[in-house]
Amino acid sequence: MIADYRSRLDEAKSLPDIFELIKSLVLKRLGKSRGGLMLGMANLGNNPQGFFGGFFTTGSNVIVLNKIPLQRIKETRPELYKPYVFHVLLHEYIHSLGYLDEADVRSKVFAISKEALGDDHLATQIASSSSEFIKHLAYPDVSWKPEDEGLELVEGFDRSSVSYIA
Image: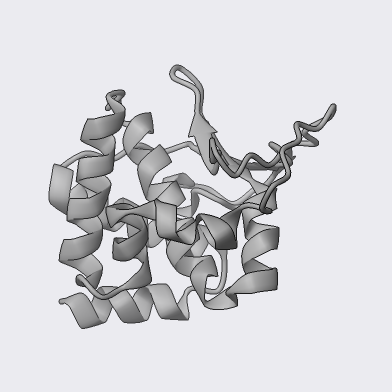
């Protein structure tokens, strides 16, 4: 079972591929799902002390990922890209299902990651304690907030909820 989920994450070629894996895991573990979500990519700035990887606004249908950590990962440890994206999308997807308590969501993310990917997987390690990964996610000693976040929607993000071809 673990090998299957690990290989599906390893073989994922896009953000929608990773999201489909997440949706199947959450449905299996929590018995809940939600369709019609969109993914926005934005420059949310950088803050090494108060890390900000993404967010979901209650009542909306958009998960937003901060592009800055993705850029930083490519510069420091590219092998963290898929585990990190998995972690943040899983966290925000669980929020989108109505779980609002941060500690509860973090606990669920860790449990799902551990069960699906194993203790030694980078996504599980990030879920366990992201602090050791901050140096690969945020630029050190620099904080900034952009004037324009420049939100870009990812095409075809929530594939399984589309029942027609336009």
